[in-house]
Image (cartoon, rainbow over all chains, first blue to last red; front, side):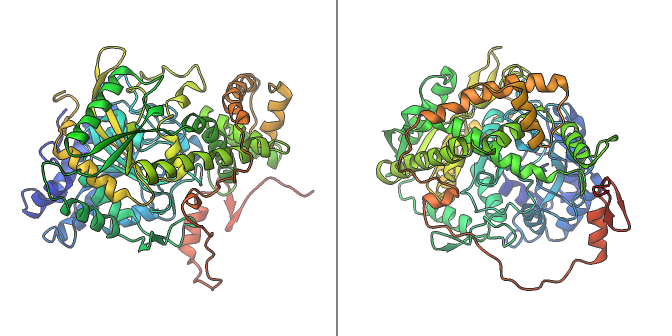
Length: 510
Length: 102
């Protein structure tokens, strides 16, 4: 289905059209509100408030003539429903927070408000960001715009689906174990998760604090650079926020400047990636990887090589340990973080109870869905007396081994690592519900990056058939060293200058 | 070592989750499947490996930042009302809970 954004390939192109008064931000917002309504079957949006979006658009129109000073003014975006917002409800996809209205805006939301983007509302996600298919959510599953019987991926599934469907130019997301990169891959859009600590987590509902990081999804890497730069920066209200990135202040401007410098330093435009060593881990191309996905990824690597990069075969021998390590650390931290839902200060409270403990235990059992209850139980167990060393401490040691794999490889063997994002294309809605760990195994290529705290992104690199013969998008993952998000974005932009996978739209061409 | 029904009840109590009979049965089987998956980490020899708690400490020395111990202006009363408006039960600016002390 066509939308008001179809005629604009990028944020810069749309911004130029707004500046030239071809259309106003208010007109665009009105059209998109209708597009969202007409595409409601996708179920990406969970809270839309036309009057708030139109107010932001009116304000943006006042500064629309000055794109140099306001490069994102009037650009339509939306937020994953894990970022708290003062005027839109914030539910984290949970019955626990079904009626929650935050008294403040998350730092990321603030930054995009200050940049005068126009928010179209809140986007569906897996409950408390726990899931890989956007199936664990009180408002029902989100549909993949490429095939309405398939999941969009998760947990930022609404974000990926909304960008893919052309309902917004970009969306915020969060990535604890792949939740930006995987839905971006499965919906054929671009997504980035920066280095841990680059973007503030203040007002981002916590899942697993040593892994959680905010990110962005958009149509291409250049758009991501503009958006990520805007939301990055030190924030004293987040204890894990980073003040300095290898000697440079963590502030808006850093990423964009480094990104532009990387693009500008190219001498031979037919070989823009000359000198770049691209590491391909053998563990990422082995058992369990779908053939169609493997072939799309291989072709993408060939494109990088044709642009001057050198392919290096590398090994990340501890890759398979990321699943047990992650599924100890993340549930442990989740059980601790989600202890705050006490049915006293906010959140769901049950209707009948005898005492305080029963009130809390019953409210929590009613308020949390199956997947969240399961992870809280796992986390509570692995942190309980007598088991801490065997599980949590051991997992933190494996985490060190996984981080050392990357450190060694990115120091000695190559400059970036590439591979698949997800072993398969998007699965059919409901098809993994019988096996509690089947969905988890699909995270094998994304979890390690969070355990190590590295930046990584996903860019569209082709299509592969699902089990019903439908062509579904495939993503190429690019993993960089600490604080190299600008380098990753520049490489992705070079790739996208020479490919058109990121320009394919669902229902238009394949 | 599989978890039993009693283990599930104990963990649920610690987690403050009142599971129904049906949920407990399902949880027992799911937890055992999860444990089978995560128990594979026990087989790895990690002698001499330091646990990694903050991901960036793999790169450089990370110290958790402390804020200055300085007074900051209190929120005004409207902010307090906004905060209280999310409480499931409140009265005169106080959160209401069942009686705890007899």
